[in-house]
Image (cartoon, rainbow, N blue to C red; front, side):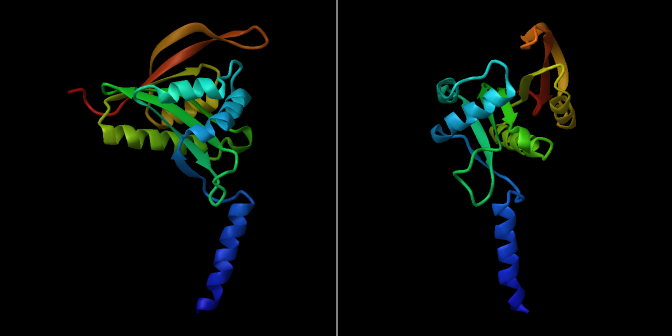
Length: 177
C-alpha cells in the first residue's frame, strides 16, 4: 500500500517545479521590492520603483503580500499587493499579477490575504481605485463585494494619449464603532 507514496511525492515535486503547484502567499519584504517594482512596470504606465515601494511599505500601517510558487521561495513573484490600514480604514495602494499568471486566481489569493489581515485588525472598510477599463480587476472586485463610491474623471493617462476615469471602490468589513 505504501509503495505509491514516493510516486505521489515525486509527482507533487514535479508539478511544483513545472509551475503548476498552488501559489503560496508570504509577507512582502525588503528583499522583494525590486522584483515587485519590475512586476509593477509590466502592469502600469507610470510604475513605482523598488525604492518608492520600500518607502510606502515603511509607512505606519502599511503591509504587503507576495505570491510565489511553492518550493521556489527565491523565484520571481507571481504577484504582489501593497496596502495601508490606519484608524480602521484601509486602502489598497497597488496590486498586480504577472501577465503569465493572470486569470489563475493569484489576484484573488492576494486580496483574500489582505481581507484576512484586515478582519483580524477589525478594520471597518477597505478602499481602492481602479481604471474603469480594467475589466478583469472590476470582475474580481465585484466578486469580492466592492461597491463603487466615487469616480475621478480622466485620472489615468495612457501612452496613446487617452484618458480614463479611476473608479473608487469600497468594501465594508465591520460596522464602524
